[in-house]
Length: 169
Image 1 (cartoon, one colour):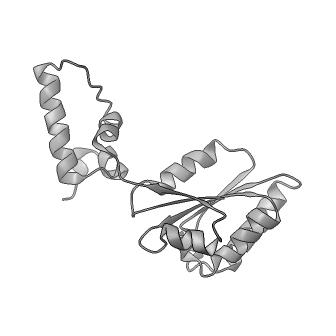
Image 2 (image 1 turned 135 degrees about the vertical axis):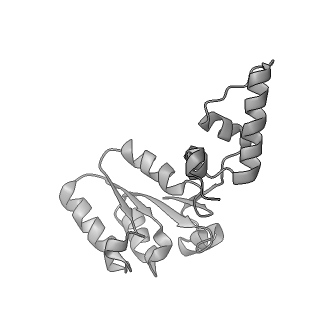
């Protein structure tokens, strides 16, 4: 079982969804979807039931995004992972669910990965900027502009990928 935690908007869902797309026999479910809000303990139970109908007699990898939305979620997740042997990936916002709480609720049977906003080096990769040992004046000017933007707007993936003309602040 793997839980990905971090502050809001740092890219947890994107990371989980990318992994989901590369995984066979998998189910992805966002628990903050307004169509099922508020989710209850029955929500993951129904998702598991549907997953087993889609992939009978298969090991399934379940991806639950924003697990902290469900009270007592750990009961279902422990049964799914430990009792039934399925793989489980979870995300949770650290504002509501800290890594210590996940470890406590799952009795330390989970690997917790904390995700942070992009570093400046990662930011430059998002911008397709490659650093050479010697920069031209134009490259140096662009690098300084990127640094100004990074310091002003931060390293949240959604903001970094947003067109500058669309920024609202």
